[in-house]
Length: 118
Image 1 (cartoon, rainbow, N blue to C red):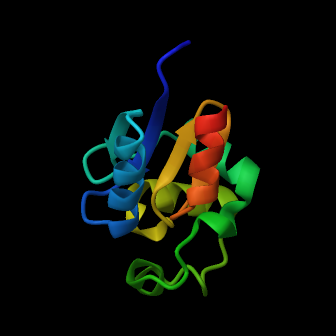
Image 2: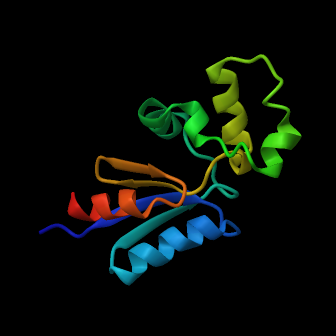
Image 3: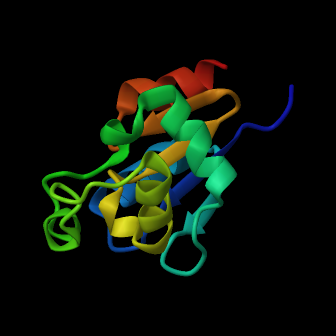
């Protein structure tokens, strides 16, 4: 049996990211944490989440960063928004978690459990 491992994209300040880390640590799952403040998400990695959930599902439309970005009013392409999200990870509903082929957005314990069943 191979060792379980998940990749968590988030920030240290995000309580949802910390919840994901705690969830997997309690279940002794190896975590590869990517702090989006230090290392932006690659476009390919982000695109994988966009294809599964759609761009709007990834955006934290309640957040301050979203309000400050004027994204609600900008006429821009999906590509333009993706570029902005890579520069400003606070626009995302964190954490983005990948375990095998299973992806989840935000605090999603059901999604996390599905990763453990993979």
